Length: 263
Image (tube, rainbow, N blue to C red; front, side):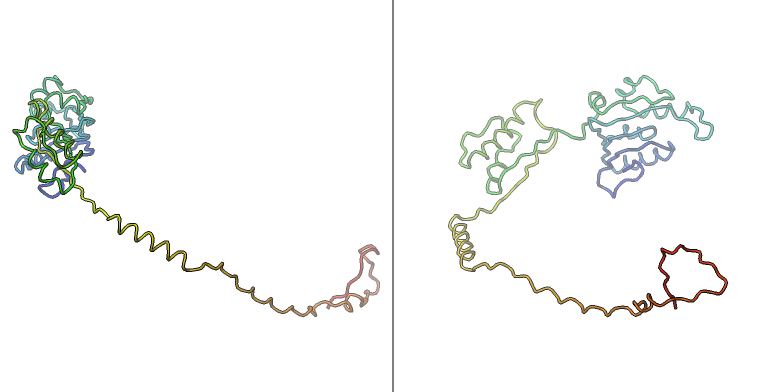
């Protein structure tokens, strides 16, 4: 997905690879994202696409690549210092300080570098916890901002204890507190009663022993077609019949060749 081809709002714009283009097109698209407060996530972003860094709701992945360079005229290939200055002014102050200036060649900043400069990490720090449906009430009671220690009483087994410990650890210190909401994936499995399972197994076993198995029999092969009668195009009588020599002619074959009459 490119920067100029977003999905329907309000879905986030995920830029997998955008090589840039006309600065005016990217300026207009950036202002539209700003009005909509759209989230823009960057994987690889080059040239005019770097205007996305000016958005308040932009983030980068740690392995992202953002490539900066001076703007130039598409026809003459000459650097446009005025447009280049507008590009540079749109970047956050920390990014400007890291780049220093723009050049005609690409200058690349990886996502991990931009995150260290203050850009938001698209991966975030939201832990994913797993609990059964019957334990949602106990887990929801423990997921509170004021939960600073694990819950001592735990009548729901080892899984709920692990969930509560993980939640409490996430909020144990300001540095470790997640910046987003904690997502809990709920998985519910139906338990099959042992009595029903064993009875089904016995029924299948009895059914398999009650029906005798007989080996399959092969059908008789089809009869062969009748033998064709001998051809009458050539018979022994024809082979023995002499042929007439043209008067005055000379044989061209030696005597070892057997003359055969033709019709």
